[in-house]
Image 1 (cartoon, rainbow, N blue to C red):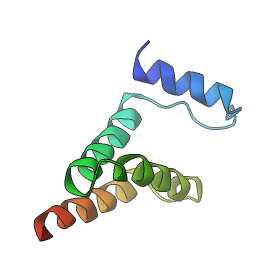
Image 2: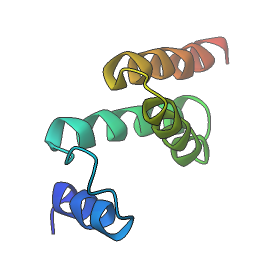
Image 3: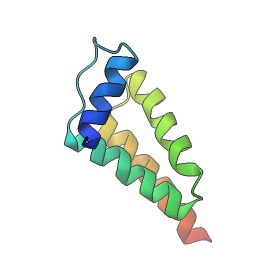
Image 4: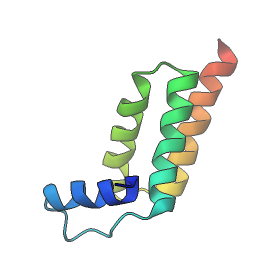
Length: 81
């Protein structure tokens, strides 16, 4: 099962039929953000940060802009260490 297929299975399980399916670019965006948070802040920051991204997007934030802002925030933490 690919991650895109997994995302679709999760979307069905959560009864999110009224939302757009996730494509590879969506999965890559989340994984890139998770990587930046895990490597620049702490490993547990990865799921927390991606969860908060999901809340922001659910409230209308642009996924690309929000993920980019959070990646910059995480990478800035690494630079400050």
